[in-house]
Image (cartoon, rainbow, N blue to C red; front, side, top):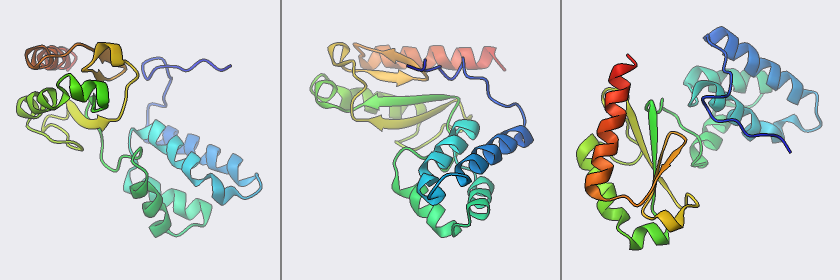
Length: 177
């Protein structure tokens, strides 16, 4: 079984040209297969893994290379919740709204995050440090309520605890500038 690498472990191309070359190689491999148009979601996943979201010019590139109307690409990208059409924040926050988290106060945690960051679901802070999205379940129900920030699960959250966690991430982002 293949080992899944975290974002930090995954080597990503450094430049747009290298990313585009990797995406083109991926599309060329798919075009050799039977029914390559059925692999559109796979191609969009690859593009998003390279860029962090689906830039307009990349969706145009996919459409042109695969011979698919751009409107179809947009239809697929906007239909599936997974795909992002805008760049995410440096730290992506997925706040669990599943049953266990909801019962243990996820709505209060959500309000604290919204108040602290001044964004709603789908938003990105003005400084680009945070983005916020809902999650149905993060698989850590015993630690409810939980949020995933980047690749790290934060559990047993309270409103005070989540605000402090966000402040700590912001301090780290400032240090890394």
